[in-house]
Length: 113
Picture 1: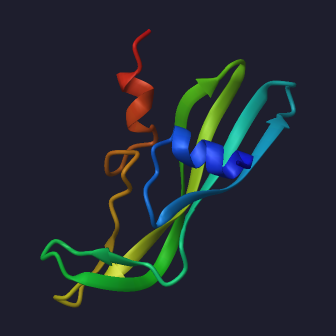
Picture 2: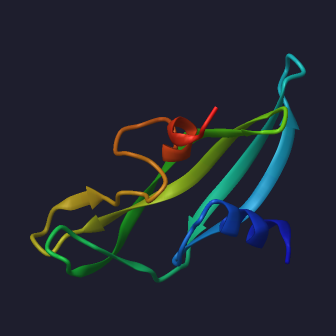
């Protein structure tokens, strides 16, 4: 099992989502952080509010703060798909790890501290 597969399972991602890559970095002030890049499989379709599977129209780059990984601040980054719905509107897909319009993952606030 490689690190992408490990983090895909640890994050509870289900197809078509998967971890593409992981990067450990130090910022200009020497603080450590972990960047996890989540992607979806090419050719994936996502359901609109009517339950109709729709192809991806385009994507938007988004980031969310996640639970720390030991001493590393952790961020998830994803190209979030937008779909053309069955009614012809362009809508952003709701990702399974965060609420709409949030900059934090669901686990960040549900973790027992």
